[in-house]
Image (cartoon, rainbow, N blue to C red; front, side, top):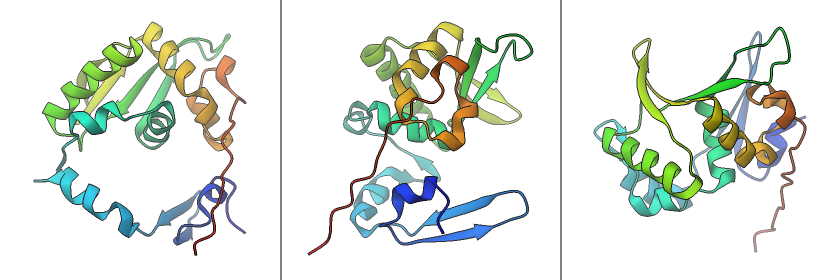
Length: 167
């Protein structure tokens, strides 16, 4: 039986690895995405075109955050209602990082900062901009990753797969 999150992708070829404390779900790369991948990866970095960045949606941002983001809850022993997000951007080329920052500001009025933590390039969100970001993506965060949300944004997941039969 597939882990619940993996059920969202059950029509894509995959492999599941059960490890001591976790389950890893690897999807086989889709041939339909080969050209995009080839145009995006150069010299060990992801180069994100302005068109690609402008096409990012709350769903795609949520997927990215679930993979590469973390939430630091500041008052976890009281209400747990304040926090700050950090998203790893190590693999993204520095020029593309700046384009992402500009797009966040222009499209969603979300300000970010760039920095380094333990040798990894990070995009930071202060508390007000964390609120804006989580408000934007809350419907797309899978129940198994609710720990990446502030309490008021939890349990709002509303993504249901629609599988289309191939002819």
